[in-house]
Length: 121
Image: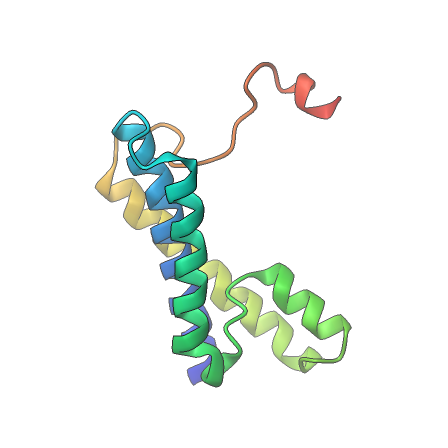
């Protein structure tokens, strides 16, 4: 149970800080910059690995958990609980950001610059 809680907290911190950096960058007209956002994501991942690596492996991303499960570096029986914990952490972080920034329409989401069809070409 402790490893699932660690995954939920680690994913919460990653989404809250990383997406929060994007929201702050948008709210302050680009003062954080793309470099600052990428550094935020990198430092958060590093901190979560140091914090939760020995507890849960610090996957903090369902894609990482799935990749480890299919390469036999991770028990397949733990895959679904890990993914559920990661989704809980991500949705909780997004909910907190929505509470903190209720007027932000995108909350750090990646949107196409032009039309949605342009993104498919």
